[in-house]
Length: 81
Image 1 (tube, rainbow, N blue to C red):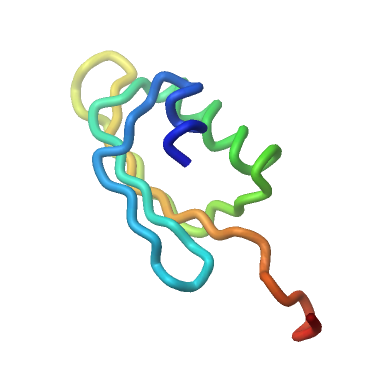
Image 2: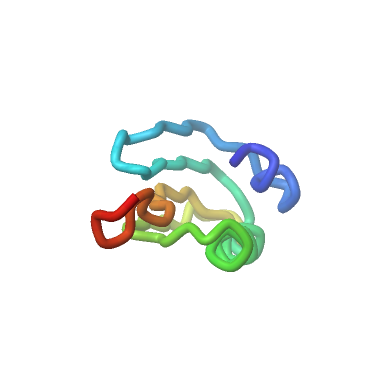
């Protein structure tokens, strides 16, 4: 996750695994465009689903604080495995 963020010029303020194949990421005072492209990247390349997000404008041009919860594909789709 850190590498993916770094590829978009981002660094997590907080990164927590939630135990249900999910991770919560907090980014502070980051460019909105970088966040948008990073979220697209994790959805397409890492197959993570954005299940919750909060984006707050922080007053500077296009700078935002973001809290997002991302969930990976199920380990046992359909209960098989």
